[in-house]
Figure 1 (cartoon, helix red, strand yellow):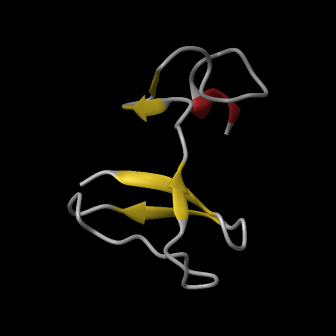
Figure 2 (tube, one colour):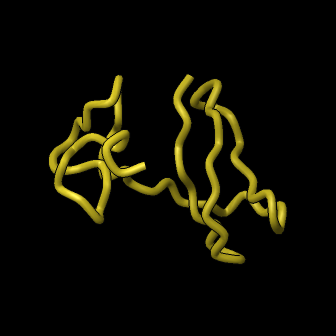
Amino acid sequence: MPIFEYRCKNCKKIFEELVRNKEQVITCPECNKSDVEKLMSASVQIGGESKGGGSSCSSCSSGNCSHCH
């Protein structure tokens, strides 16, 4: 079950939602409207490695967040 990031078109709140199936209606936790858009993810971090290009931290070039955080 993937977690997606959404932005509410009504109040502009950005939030994450665990999506259990394609038919699930996503509603904004702030204003409770279902007029939301799915945002694109820049990268996915798996096991400490950045997948999807570049560093997983915008402020460093190590590619390993345990180095920064």
